[in-house]
Length: 114
Image 1 (spheres, helix red, strand yellow):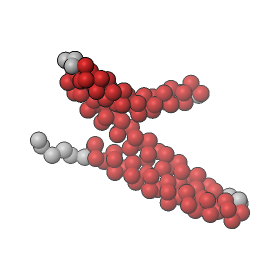
Image 2 (cartoon, one colour):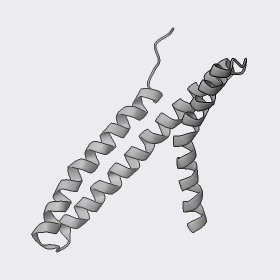
Image 3 (spheres, helix red, strand yellow):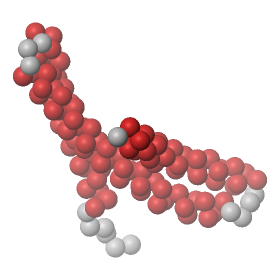
């Protein structure tokens, strides 16, 4: 199980960092006048799409988890501080999940013809 969690962590890190690395390589290749610069720029769009889609899905899952944690904190006896913290986590988690749905819907929805 720890191997699976480690692999997922590396996958998420790769999704977040890969577009930035390709953009840095593009800037370097462009400054050096290399012909590969335009191909790097073309490869950047699918990487950015994957990054935004992965971020949207992660926000949905993370937001639901935060909301569930807040609901758990409200139900369990943690005193006034535990209840208040839980009550604040529920709307924040739902807001984060809705933001993730909005980002994900932008990629899944119909596209306008060019």
